[in-house]
Picture 1 (cartoon, rainbow, N blue to C red):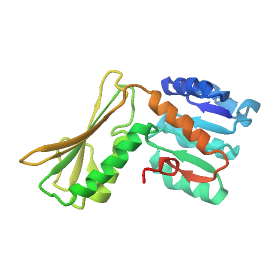
Picture 2: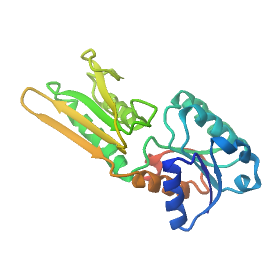
Picture 3: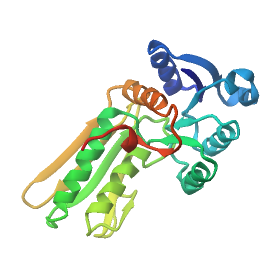
Picture 4: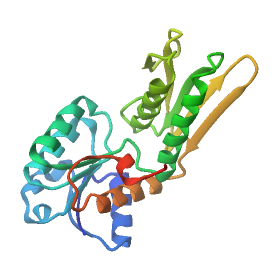
Length: 239
């Protein structure tokens, strides 16, 4: 499979390594210094583009891929104000776009576990719920896209929580997310339910970027021949 990489930081390099090991060809690598290569023959030959860039550049990168009819797999977060527009483009113009806030298979198992636990805890209002997430100091968005995905799942299932809030204090109907940025931590997410009697918590801790990168390559393999707005729910079936 011919793959173009958009964004060539630590994640891009890890994706390149895994893609090559799986027998794929990296035909183009685009970073901030060579944006003119979107019109290069090498980029135009790509069967899919894997995009891990900066939030402020993401939507523009997607548009460039759409204009060139190249499917997109993206893991960039912090651009979701354009989500409805991307979905509309996919539907109206039959484009291919795969988005996940986190491509780790383990994290997506964690998503399913979080959703199931929230459904149970909706029946036990004596438990207060909050979240903690920690990432490396270079991560720009806070809370992380993964934390927001977890929070939205909790809000969908726990009636007593109305909105998430990135803060130390909030109202009773706020789901608090405590965000930390430290060192080179790949990612830690924890959901905590606490009552006067006990504490229940579930936690996912990434050991490296390898799991994220592998998931992105698997997604690139999955989108071949498919159209529309796709996600990990399409690729994985935990039912």
